[in-house]
Image (cartoon, rainbow, N blue to C red; front, side, top):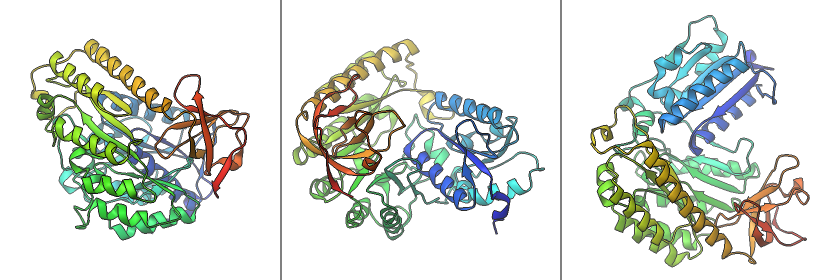
Length: 450
């Protein structure tokens, strides 16, 4: 039994590093604490509770996690500090030794975070502690469907990964693939709709692997969610190419609410490197998937993850990747420099790329990404489209996204509070000042729905 009286009138600060899945989980924890009487701190206000949800995808992420922990401890003297997430699962002892940290929770314990927090908060005289399970014993699933202070909801449909790519520690941090039932996820989506949500992003670690726990399939889930008419838009976050079936692509092309927007990790355009990474596909399969999407959704936005400078990526291998991506009809590249991760089998690959070369290769791919994104945006100038606008900070330009994920900017002078979370018909104008969005071209905006 949780003693909620101890939390009445308390304040909390939240800090999230890493992926959309982490954001979804943090916002869910915040909502649960709010229901117990805990208020989120205002800027500059000290907190009674600090919750830090960590990432460990690179050594840079680890460093940022440590920095965030030290900063929140320093800015909130006397606060009860809880650290969870991937870095907490992988390095619990080291984190528990940081002055000011009270509780460290691994991936299995995250599902019962509120109970652990309650026990620790009420008995603060206890020494700092950490609670984690080995990877094989991470079996819990913490449901999450929340938007925090954003407009779009993030629905966690899956957790964990069975792939064990040679460069990655995420399976060790998150455990094996697992998921809840379709029925439970449909109910969470219906609740989001009841709260006024119009767009939901499906999140997870390897969401195409949905069904390992329940014997269902990701396509079954997509079809069920598409039937919730009050949700006007769904977006699918990162989906492995070998799990992106033609049936799923075809369904999205004709569906009511699944947007023409895909995010597909490639990692390398060299088959040699893909084999070293132990990826589950080759570049021909990837190219076939892109071609299939474009054949049924010509205006689909396709984002691609690319890892640069991993072990074994010779100059020839990188040039293969660059040429492959240059010829591919994709919209944006998410470029990540390779980072050595302790305990991974990639450390046994002999060819090492130096940091200077990684930066040069990253810049070439980022420049290529800008060219592709701006060309994609330019093709849509002058079109009339539906945009779901999001609340903007006071005095800032308001922005939103089209069905195919073009970022649209509404100048601060035209922004109105009632535009938030509304589908509005606009005519797309030219680029904004830094070419990261298209401006709204018409004076009068038309509401599509309320």
